[in-house]
Length: 254
Ligand SMILES: Nc1ncnc2c1ncn2[C@@H]1O[C@H](COP(=O)(O)OP(=O)(O)OP(=O)(O)O)[C@@H](O)[C@H]1O
Image (cartoon, rainbow, N blue to C red; front, side):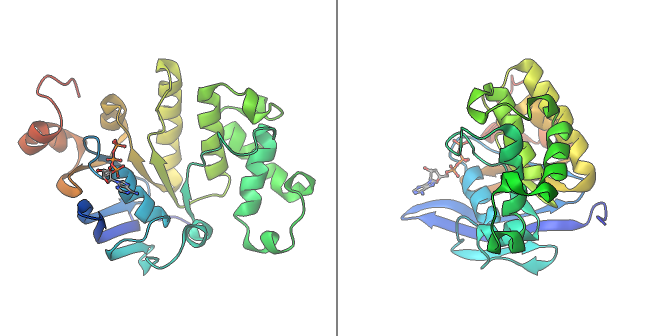
């Protein structure tokens, strides 16, 4: 049972440096169930570094990450995934010979701690079939279940990556540039999917397409040089003079 507006993922005063370069400088933000929280900022602002610290693939130098109010700062990515933190898979390099359905079944299996111990091929495990099929249909690619991942078009592959994340029924979804490389229609379709997903989870969205950000987001946090310069509803962020100066050109149509 998910409670709308309940904080599900929090960054508290995260700091991360690479040598002399400060990539994350006191980042705090809260992702809530039922909300799309966009994290924007110019190239090199530290968005991907922030996502990596939230997902658990990068350890912060200081600060805390909380999942449903409990610290997960010292938990690795697999541990956080088991709690319900999902990030789109990058499958381009992964098992291209598998079908879309098999790829999602494998993702479901990977999310089940006990199955990992008594491992059998995902394709032979019927309990993985239904959630995998459901995820493909939710993403509108049910008809591609038997297509090999390597034969999918770029946009279809992005949808498959999201199906793999969704099949594990996450409580938080981290999306790092989901629209990259998509055409107009694919972007519109994926936007509708993401909008529908937020009913059941919190979503953190890093995205360069400002039309998408300002259409989808309930909250926008703006990073510059690893630090938050503004955070609030899109209507407020759009008109924030610091944001316009630092990031959005005055001519931008956002
Ligand atoms: N592993 C690393 N080692 C050294 N520097 C890094 C590393 N990862 C990121 N950086 C640097 O940290 C800063 C933030 O990078 P990051 O990729 O998080 O920014 P970003 O906002 O996601 O950028 P973009 O929008 O271009 O993807 C950049 O200056 C980058 O060069």
